[in-house]
Image (cartoon, rainbow, N blue to C red; front, side):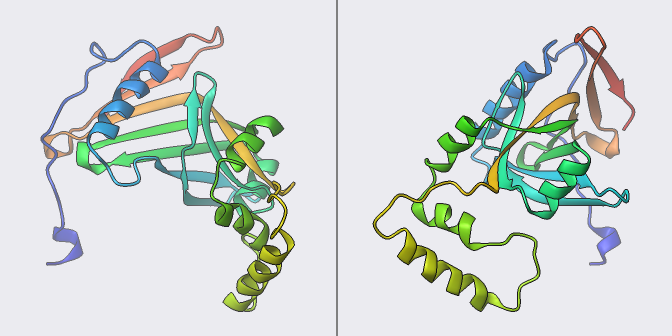
Length: 212
Protein backbone atom coordinates (compact mmCIF):
# COMPACT_ATOMS: atom_id res chain seq x y z
CA UNK A 1 0.00 0.00 0.00
CA UNK A 2 1.31 3.45 -0.87
CA UNK A 3 1.62 6.13 1.79
CA UNK A 4 -0.92 8.27 -0.08
CA UNK A 5 -3.48 5.46 0.17
CA UNK A 6 -3.33 5.24 3.96
CA UNK A 7 -6.52 6.73 5.36
CA UNK A 8 -9.14 6.20 8.02
CA UNK A 9 -12.64 7.62 8.28
CA UNK A 10 -13.63 8.93 11.72
CA UNK A 11 -17.07 7.77 12.82
CA UNK A 12 -17.23 7.72 16.62
CA UNK A 13 -18.79 11.00 17.77
CA UNK A 14 -19.68 14.59 16.98
CA UNK A 15 -19.03 17.89 18.76
CA UNK A 16 -21.26 20.95 18.73
CA UNK A 17 -20.79 24.46 20.06
CA UNK A 18 -24.18 23.95 21.69
CA UNK A 19 -22.93 20.90 23.58
CA UNK A 20 -19.60 22.03 24.99
CA UNK A 21 -19.08 23.58 28.40
CA UNK A 22 -18.77 27.37 28.44
CA UNK A 23 -15.41 27.00 30.22
CA UNK A 24 -12.63 25.31 28.21
CA UNK A 25 -11.02 23.87 31.34
CA UNK A 26 -14.29 22.15 32.26
CA UNK A 27 -14.52 20.85 28.69
CA UNK A 28 -10.96 19.56 29.02
CA UNK A 29 -11.98 17.89 32.30
CA UNK A 30 -14.72 15.99 30.45
CA UNK A 31 -12.45 14.85 27.65
CA UNK A 32 -9.61 14.02 30.03
CA UNK A 33 -11.86 11.76 32.10
CA UNK A 34 -13.05 10.00 28.95
CA UNK A 35 -9.47 9.59 27.77
CA UNK A 36 -8.48 8.11 31.12
CA UNK A 37 -11.39 5.65 31.00
CA UNK A 38 -10.43 4.68 27.45
CA UNK A 39 -7.14 3.31 28.81
CA UNK A 40 -5.07 5.25 26.28
CA UNK A 41 -1.38 4.45 26.45
CA UNK A 42 0.62 7.55 27.53
CA UNK A 43 -2.60 9.54 27.79
CA UNK A 44 -0.63 12.52 29.14
CA UNK A 45 1.77 12.65 26.17
CA UNK A 46 1.53 15.95 24.31
CA UNK A 47 3.47 17.71 21.58
CA UNK A 48 5.13 20.94 22.71
CA UNK A 49 5.97 23.40 19.94
CA UNK A 50 8.33 26.33 20.50
CA UNK A 51 10.02 28.90 18.27
CA UNK A 52 13.66 30.00 18.17
CA UNK A 53 14.69 33.69 18.17
CA UNK A 54 15.24 33.26 14.41
CA UNK A 55 11.64 32.15 13.96
CA UNK A 56 12.44 28.46 13.43
CA UNK A 57 9.80 26.16 14.96
CA UNK A 58 10.62 22.92 16.76
CA UNK A 59 8.44 20.31 18.44
CA UNK A 60 8.82 17.34 20.74
CA UNK A 61 6.73 15.11 23.00
CA UNK A 62 6.57 16.00 26.71
CA UNK A 63 4.33 14.69 29.48
CA UNK A 64 1.54 16.60 31.17
CA UNK A 65 2.08 16.48 34.92
CA UNK A 66 -0.83 18.61 36.09
CA UNK A 67 -3.35 21.22 35.06
CA UNK A 68 -5.79 23.64 36.64
CA UNK A 69 -7.61 26.82 35.68
CA UNK A 70 -4.26 28.59 35.40
CA UNK A 71 -2.71 26.28 32.83
CA UNK A 72 -0.97 23.04 31.87
CA UNK A 73 2.25 21.93 33.58
CA UNK A 74 5.26 19.93 32.40
CA UNK A 75 8.84 19.59 33.67
CA UNK A 76 12.18 19.68 31.89
CA UNK A 77 15.76 20.94 31.82
CA UNK A 78 15.78 24.76 31.64
CA UNK A 79 19.04 24.62 29.65
CA UNK A 80 17.57 22.37 26.96
CA UNK A 81 16.67 23.58 23.46
CA UNK A 82 13.04 24.08 24.48
CA UNK A 83 14.06 25.82 27.68
CA UNK A 84 16.27 28.28 25.82
CA UNK A 85 13.60 28.92 23.21
CA UNK A 86 10.96 29.53 25.87
CA UNK A 87 13.30 32.00 27.57
CA UNK A 88 13.61 33.97 24.34
CA UNK A 89 9.99 33.58 23.27
CA UNK A 90 7.50 32.32 25.88
CA UNK A 91 4.73 31.69 23.34
CA UNK A 92 4.13 27.97 22.89
CA UNK A 93 1.59 25.41 21.69
CA UNK A 94 0.55 22.06 23.15
CA UNK A 95 -1.22 19.33 21.20
CA UNK A 96 -2.87 16.19 22.55
CA UNK A 97 -3.83 13.45 20.05
CA UNK A 98 -6.05 10.70 21.44
CA UNK A 99 -6.51 8.54 18.36
CA UNK A 100 -8.59 5.95 20.21
CA UNK A 101 -11.25 8.64 20.72
CA UNK A 102 -10.57 10.36 17.38
CA UNK A 103 -9.81 13.59 19.23
CA UNK A 104 -7.23 16.35 19.43
CA UNK A 105 -6.86 19.25 21.86
CA UNK A 106 -4.70 22.21 20.81
CA UNK A 107 -3.62 24.81 23.38
CA UNK A 108 -1.84 28.08 22.59
CA UNK A 109 -0.55 30.43 25.24
CA UNK A 110 2.25 31.97 27.23
CA UNK A 111 4.68 29.72 29.06
CA UNK A 112 6.15 30.63 32.44
CA UNK A 113 8.14 28.78 35.09
CA UNK A 114 6.22 27.29 38.00
CA UNK A 115 7.27 28.13 41.56
CA UNK A 116 10.36 26.59 43.16
CA UNK A 117 8.07 24.83 45.63
CA UNK A 118 6.04 23.26 42.83
CA UNK A 119 9.19 22.10 41.05
CA UNK A 120 10.55 20.65 44.30
CA UNK A 121 7.30 18.83 45.07
CA UNK A 122 7.26 17.07 41.72
CA UNK A 123 11.01 16.41 41.62
CA UNK A 124 11.01 14.65 44.98
CA UNK A 125 8.04 12.50 43.92
CA UNK A 126 10.12 11.03 41.06
CA UNK A 127 12.00 7.71 41.31
CA UNK A 128 15.60 8.12 42.39
CA UNK A 129 16.89 7.05 38.99
CA UNK A 130 14.94 9.82 37.29
CA UNK A 131 16.22 12.36 39.82
CA UNK A 132 19.83 11.34 39.17
CA UNK A 133 19.13 11.39 35.44
CA UNK A 134 18.20 15.07 35.69
CA UNK A 135 21.77 15.72 36.85
CA UNK A 136 23.46 13.26 34.47
CA UNK A 137 22.20 14.58 31.13
CA UNK A 138 23.28 17.92 29.63
CA UNK A 139 20.04 17.91 27.66
CA UNK A 140 20.18 19.01 24.00
CA UNK A 141 23.97 19.42 24.05
CA UNK A 142 26.18 17.47 21.64
CA UNK A 143 28.05 14.64 23.42
CA UNK A 144 30.75 12.35 22.07
CA UNK A 145 28.99 9.08 22.91
CA UNK A 146 26.62 7.28 25.27
CA UNK A 147 29.68 6.64 27.45
CA UNK A 148 29.45 10.26 28.66
CA UNK A 149 26.02 9.63 30.17
CA UNK A 150 27.07 6.31 31.66
CA UNK A 151 30.14 7.87 33.27
CA UNK A 152 28.11 10.76 34.64
CA UNK A 153 25.61 8.30 36.08
CA UNK A 154 28.30 6.29 37.87
CA UNK A 155 29.81 9.42 39.43
CA UNK A 156 26.44 10.78 40.53
CA UNK A 157 25.34 7.47 42.04
CA UNK A 158 28.50 7.62 44.16
CA UNK A 159 27.87 11.27 45.06
CA UNK A 160 24.30 10.64 46.19
CA UNK A 161 24.89 7.20 47.71
CA UNK A 162 24.32 8.36 51.28
CA UNK A 163 22.46 11.60 50.70
CA UNK A 164 19.15 12.63 49.09
CA UNK A 165 19.25 13.55 45.41
CA UNK A 166 18.55 17.28 45.35
CA UNK A 167 16.84 19.10 42.48
CA UNK A 168 19.31 20.61 40.00
CA UNK A 169 18.99 24.40 39.65
CA UNK A 170 18.62 23.91 35.89
CA UNK A 171 15.59 21.61 36.18
CA UNK A 172 11.97 22.47 36.92
CA UNK A 173 8.47 23.08 35.68
CA UNK A 174 6.67 25.27 33.18
CA UNK A 175 3.02 26.24 33.01
CA UNK A 176 1.39 27.17 29.71
CA UNK A 177 -1.43 29.65 30.33
CA UNK A 178 -3.90 29.29 27.47
CA UNK A 179 -5.19 32.12 25.31
CA UNK A 180 -6.71 29.67 22.81
CA UNK A 181 -7.99 26.12 23.25
CA UNK A 182 -9.33 24.07 20.36
CA UNK A 183 -11.25 20.80 20.69
CA UNK A 184 -11.19 18.65 17.53
CA UNK A 185 -13.48 15.68 17.00
CA UNK A 186 -12.91 13.50 13.95
CA UNK A 187 -15.89 13.16 11.58
CA UNK A 188 -16.55 11.28 8.32
CA UNK A 189 -15.19 12.56 4.98
CA UNK A 190 -12.68 14.81 6.77
CA UNK A 191 -15.50 17.21 7.76
CA UNK A 192 -14.27 17.30 11.34
CA UNK A 193 -15.79 19.28 14.20
CA UNK A 194 -13.52 22.03 15.52
CA UNK A 195 -14.62 24.14 18.49
CA UNK A 196 -12.38 27.05 19.45
CA UNK A 197 -12.28 28.91 22.76
CA UNK A 198 -10.54 32.28 22.57
CA UNK A 199 -10.02 34.54 25.57
CA UNK A 200 -11.25 38.10 25.25
CA UNK A 201 -9.69 41.16 26.92
CA UNK A 202 -12.25 40.89 29.73
CA UNK A 203 -10.95 37.34 30.39
CA UNK A 204 -14.22 35.82 29.17
CA UNK A 205 -14.06 32.89 26.75
CA UNK A 206 -15.67 33.19 23.32
CA UNK A 207 -16.73 29.96 21.59
CA UNK A 208 -16.50 29.62 17.79
CA UNK A 209 -16.71 26.86 15.22
CA UNK A 210 -13.82 26.49 12.76
CA UNK A 211 -14.13 24.97 9.32
CA UNK A 212 -12.19 21.69 9.07
